[in-house]
Length: 409
Image 1 (cartoon, rainbow, N blue to C red):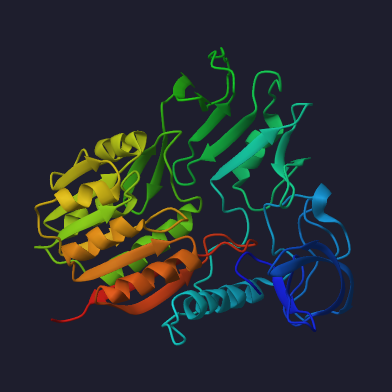
Image 2: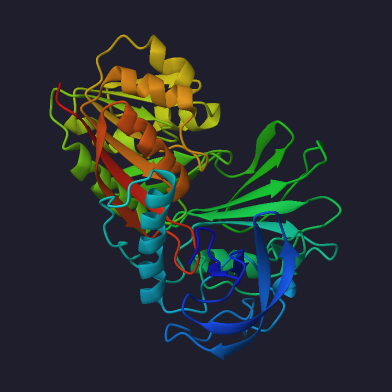
């Protein structure tokens, strides 16, 4: 299984062929549907010998059989055709492969993938596009084709209730994001439009609604943010702010990070790409000071509000590579949770120059994590462990928490 979720085969001439909805170890007849310079992509015509991990998909929007063209089906899930045990094993293998291929670490200390608390109904956030009839749609695989969705087995039940009752004018809106606080019960609707004119909205439902257009985010009904509880803390989350889509497994991430950092009461903790403060604020009572760096002004404003009961935080708005070199405080511990592209090289160099003794790296892409691990090794940081944590069952997406320790000088 390859990074990206497809099965990988080699033709007799050595060309790599990626085949979606196949499983490693199967024998199949495959039609080549796309040829590139270094690889090809195939579509299954017939499974000749099924893998023992193959099962019938649960969702009617998932391709029902290997020979069916997926263009009329939803691309949100890629792995419903295999057992959950197989998903976990393949994710572990993919992370190990990425460290071997990208970082040249053949024996990287990658732990078995930690399973999700729930294989289904876990997402607290879903983004939909509207078609010409106003139906809420997800996109077909590798396509802009909009597939109307009647039900979804990976989103929280509260989102399913909102999905069934929401009616929108496709002339007024292009898309909608539905959010729910799993622990608080709060519901939030974010309406998207290319039209800068702010609509008037009325509802009798207990829900908050915001409008998001080009460079504008305006609350229309209810609160300006969604509140969600993770552990003992409640976090406010603005429409434009990032938050983990799996609340239950966000707690697992917190536990893994805290174990890696092993904070002391005298430590100064850097929380880079801090978002609304999930990690830094939770760890603040354990350390002397927390430095939060975030470039999204809405998320940073959320973090400041979320830290109202704490006195040992300082906040910096801007890019990590711009803020880090200006810090005068000695950093003992560092936590980074960058976007999928990983750390900017200048940000990584600036972080290493601060010489924290331990670094916890939260990643949603094992390839960029492996790349950054190799760079950190050049700066004298040893990779102690990589823990994949499954925040995204039924999909190929993989969250990891990696531990790095500065070598003794």
